[in-house]
Picture (spheres, rainbow, N blue to C red):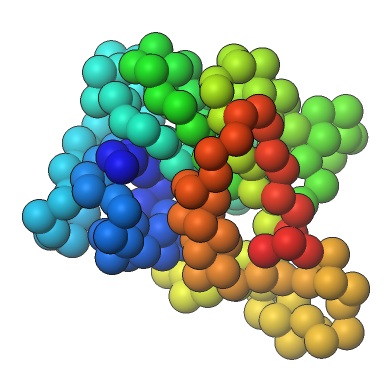
Length: 205
């Protein structure tokens, strides 16, 4: 199986890359990245290019499965439009490119509470992204909706530190999840052979 990964420099994407390179059933791993990777591996091919150039590099998306682990925050992105470019426009462009190249399976990391009708900007964008990707009608689409992500980030996020402390007292549906667990669930989902859309909620991760 040949796969393509977006978001390899992020929390979930980095974990996914490690697992994909170790997975025997995966014979080739392409990475579309905004910045160079320090990882080298015989199975790995990296294309470094801006996210808004995905359409220009459509042929690179020829793969059996495309995994999208792109994500940012409004604080890190700097504005709502910049956030939307990363969390909506790029994942959708990747799905369009994947479909044009005959990709069978598109996997997307979304978020708990994703809802295109939400009054919360973050949740609304996530929901709009899900809907747009599903509407493309790829043979198989898998969407993961993790709660607050835990892991070793470069930047400090107080909410995640607090969430980790109170995890034992939070209902399972809303408990923070480790990025490594999301990555494992995502890579495991590569083996699905059925068609249609499957949504994996945080409690299933």
